[in-house]
Length: 475
Image (tube, rainbow, N blue to C red; front, side, top):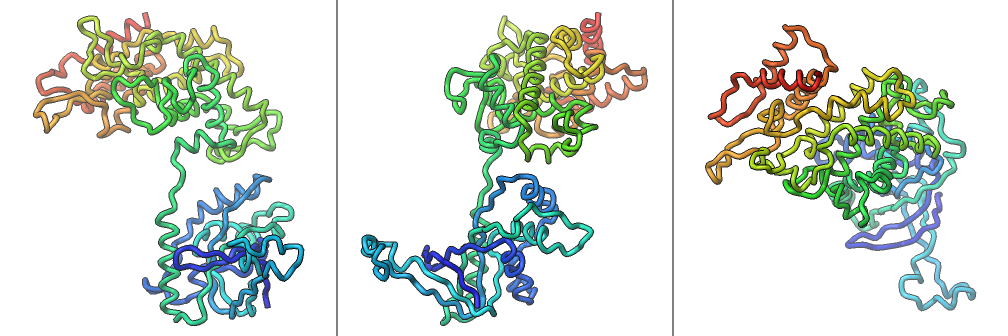
C-alpha cells in the first residue's frame, strides 16, 4: 500500500491530484510509456523519443552543478493500483471550523491511496525523469554521475492523473495520449530575447544587459525594453529604424569579442581557480561565475567596444540615416552603412577579434593605446554598402516581382558563404592576411562568384577597386 498526502483539483474533464514524491521514489516507480505498455504500434506508442544529449549535457549537468536546481511538476498517469482518495473535511477538526464553508477548501485536501500494484508513467517531463534516473539508477556504471548530496531525498511535485474505475482501459489510454499530445503541442519555450533579458546564470546575457545599462554608446535614458539604441524584440532590423543593433546580435557580438584564444584553449572561469575552469563555452553559460570575474569580463568588454568606437568614425552616424538601402552616398546623403546591419556587424567584430589575436603583443590586459593601434586600419575602410567589397556581396540586387523593378536588399541566399568571404576580404584589406598571387586570385574569384549586381552593371575592374582600397588603408 502507498499513501500520498494530496490536493484534489479539476480542469476541463480531468480530475487530478497534486502529490509530492521523493526523487528516489520517482526514479524507482515512475516509468516511461514503453515500459508500462508494451505494445509498440503507432496507436499505442505514447512516449516520444528521449534526447539523450539533452539529458546528459543539459539537465544532469544542471542538477549536479547548481545548488539551487528546481524542477516544475511532472505529469504522471497512473494505471491500476485501485486508487482511492480519502478527503479531509474541515469541519472534522475544530481548529479549522472557521474555514468549513469556504468554497474550494473543504473536500480538497486528503490522502491518495494505492494498493501498490499500480504503474506510473510520465505524460510530461520525460526528460526530467530520465535525468533523475540517470543520477539515481544509471543503466551503465561507466556513465555514472555522482548525484548531489541528499538528492535522493529531495522532493518534487507530481500531478497525478488517474483512470476512473468505470472507464475502459483502451478508451482511457486514448485520453492519456491526447493529454500527452496537448501538453507537448502547446508547451512553448521562452524566446531568445526573453532568455537574454531574464537569465541570471549566462555570463554573456548578464554582460549584455549591463552594457546596455552602463555604456554610453548603448545605454538609453528610457526603459531598456524600449531602448532606442538596442532592439529588444526580434533579430532583423528595419530600414531607418533608430536601433544600432538587436539584443540577440549584441549578445553574439559580445560572445565573439570575449572568446580569446586563452579562454578557448584553457577554459572559462577565474584563472586563479584552474580546477573550476569550464572548457565548453555552452556549458559555461549555465553557471553564473563569481562577481569579480564578471566585473573583469565587463571591464574587458568595455575596453574592446571603446576601442572599436574610437577607431571607426562611422559608428557615430545616426542609425536612422545609415540604414537606407536606396542611399548610395551621392548628393550629400548618408550612405547605407555596413556597420548598421547584423551581417556587417558580425564581419567587423570577427575581424576585430582576429586582429586582437594576431597583432597584440599579449591579450592579457591590453591598454587602450595598444588596442587603438591594432584597430586603426578599420577606420580607413569604406563601410558604404554601395561600395566594394560590400555591394553585391552583402547588399544584393533582386527583382521586386510586384513592382517589376529591381531593388537592393540585405543578402539572405548563400548568406553563410557571403559572410565567410566578406570576413576573408576584410582581413586582407586591413593587412591581417598576406596572400600570395594565387591565393589572392582565388579570393577574387570567390568574391566575384558571389556578387549579385544589377544586370546592367559590369564586374570588370571591381577587384582593382578593392585592391586600391587596401593600398589606401595600409599606406
